[in-house]
Length: 320
Image (cartoon, rainbow, N blue to C red; front, side, top):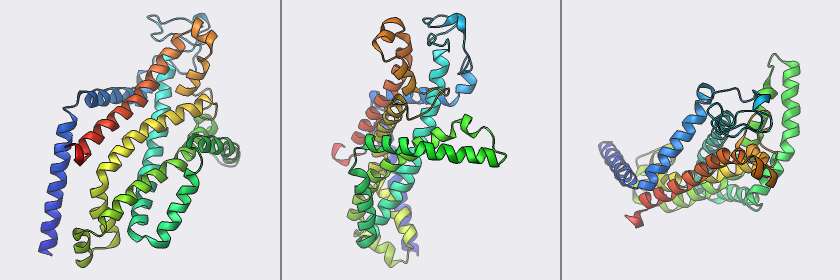
């Protein structure tokens, strides 16, 4: 028992020391710090959109239709006289909610858990999980997401309307819960397998090591071995994968909205705003309609990708 406690303390101190060294190396990278600051600012703007947005996102000013950026409308107005800055802030909030929840539940909860189980138990369990994942991965990601979004929306919409008609829950459709659910299910459906395969590979290389055999000999339960001993030793590639995956997931959510399969009007979304300003006539006449949402979308995707690349350099033992 004493040996077990000492081993656990030593491993915990080693893990903390590793994280401290990684953080020290990360903050010395100017690109990484710049990306973190930019992402925090953009995400904070989206989270606090109800407090800092100057107007309601549905408010229309018919006297200021297609107005360029001025002191009253810092980012200009759109074709219906709505304030672009307000709509971009609310669009960021929608993107933050959808992508963070999808990544947390899809890649982290589902992907990590199935990867641990698949790699540790092997045999039939491993075969079933991997074959199911390969079926999903056999489709191009964006095609699978589009198919799911297009086929699920009518069914979910009918179910939510039935809830409104038969319960006291009013305003569910207007709240955007249908859009959130459709995009969430579409993103989760393809995001879990890559993480599961990554974690499975880490577990396969770790489960026969001496410290895992010692944990089994000391009577550690299977959940303790999986989540206390194996998972912390696979955390570095997981962090890198999540960081880089966020950029891809944000891009996918924007593309879905651009194609009309994501957030539906009147709720604003970055993809829909890019679609409205994407024609040549709009670029000539109202270029500011593309500038703000395009800059925000570019910052989010590029920021996460560059931060993931920096984290890969920091956490990869071959680059130390």
